[in-house]
Amino acid sequence: MSRVALEGGNKTGGEKPRLASDHYDGERFFNPSGIPGKNFSDVLRWWWREERTPWPKSVEVPVAPPLPVVLPKGELHVTFIGHATFLLRTSEWSLLTDPHFTERASPMSFAGPKRVRRPAYTLQEIPKVDFVFVSHNHYDHMDIGSLREIQKRFQSEIIVPLKNEVVLNERGLNQVTTLDWWQTIQRGTLKITLTPAEHWSARGLWDRNKALWGGAIIEWGKERIFFAGDTGYGPHFSTIRSRLGQPSLSLLPIGAYEPRWFMKNHHMNPDEAVMAHVDLAAKNSLGMHFGTFQLTNEGLDDPEKDLTKALRDRKVSAEIFRAARFGETMILQSSTTSK
Ligand code: ZN
Ligand code: ZN
Image (tube, rainbow, N blue to C red; front, side, top):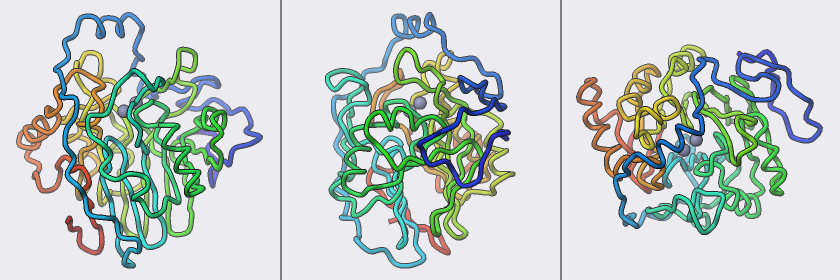
């Protein structure tokens, strides 16, 4: 645990310099497990020498039913919008994870990974967004265009790992609350704890690992949703279960994993996602972070095929862990059902 964890999160403005911790050296964040970062020659080797399986330019997303404006009391609705974007709603609050509704996951509007699937719901189709959780600053997770639109429409509070407020504030986004790993905030009946992940951060050439990354345990009554963000496989899943409890539902990345020599430290493959599901002892899991942006070498459908194989190999029921369907809503209540 960080030695500098504070209760209640930090509203930005007048942020004090932070002390070093087991994942921060006073200037940059790091993974306590000691996994190495990528060096520039590895990036070039991947870029020049590895073959990418081509993806289609676009894939149809079935039309999803309109989202209800009012939810029944006692239900938590988890809607998959695409990539790492989920809408979590109760009758009391609504929260988006890593909202991405624009065309590209890139610093440039004219180049970089372009979405092949549209978001299953547009922002205009979402009745309300009280909170946003952004797991880290990579372009497929922190999309400034989407965040601006959300804050303009809903004045939502944005919850991020430490130091991500810097880039958000520079872009005119406010109401940002920062959390260190294991730090918790409560907003009415919603409780969010930032959890560790094995990953890294950068938006440009000069900000490598200057902002923290993570996942979140989102609690509401007895329901506990784990949103993993981007992560390699590591011991943190077991630690999260032992410190915060068994999730009712975990949302685990299953895409962006090939080639393994380059991706393994920072992105799980479906087999590792199944291991994470087992470590977490999650009642149910949904695979995410696939089929939207081509970030790595595997084919469009490989994550789902590899997940099916991994579940068979590890004897985990495909009814408990499957890839999320674009636009589906899973409803959690005393018993968990899907429609
Ligand atoms: Zn990332
Ligand atoms: Zn990602």
